[in-house]
Length: 276
Image (cartoon, rainbow, N blue to C red; front, side, top):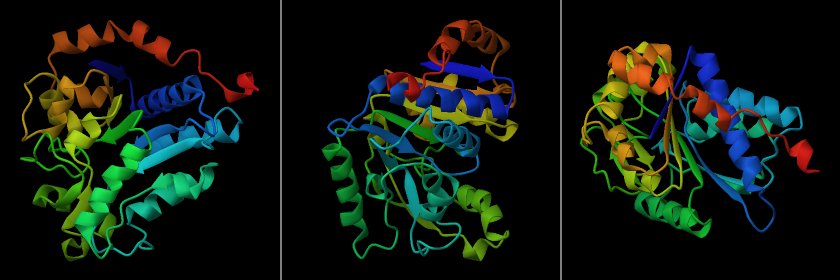
């Protein structure tokens, strides 16, 4: 398990984007071998997406041979709704890059049979050869995707009822009106993300500090589902200074002492121009 600590949100976002960029380029994807990327929504990954768009526009990175699988989607919210995760992904990322729309997979929260939709999503991941790198964010209560506190740590893609903490946190996207916030969502399971060959979790802000403490310094606990990734063979937690406020000084010093090793993962930043 790696913990990468950057000074602020922008630097954490840039580090994460560089890491994703280098992993895709090193993989050397082509028409017979796609790189498979799991993606989150929310405010945390926005900076990372902006940097990836920048790398693409500079000609350094292509998503032509990348398949994406999003973590979750609200149930009952029209796909065209500005707060649907379909809208979020297209407006903030997909429409700015060269991904083939048929390779961008997002759960359909309006499917007639929601269980069949979830089962089909798992099958699509399997048919794509599994996820090479799953990027995630967490909630202040330590949930990853919509795997709320108490979720099974071997869960698969399924329908979930959202916790009140999550509904309250999401109300800011619905003008603070709790009655408009969806109460159910389709989400990949903890087990789905654990199956990825590599996992990178972005945690920024003081309001996520207690969750990071639970993820890093305490044991695996289904009340803090992010803690499951202590047991993944290739997990990188990327955070800013503010998110480390609840960690022991000794823990922060230890991981900061490894930054010279971690920075070799993103420096140099590779470019697809060099492969042509």
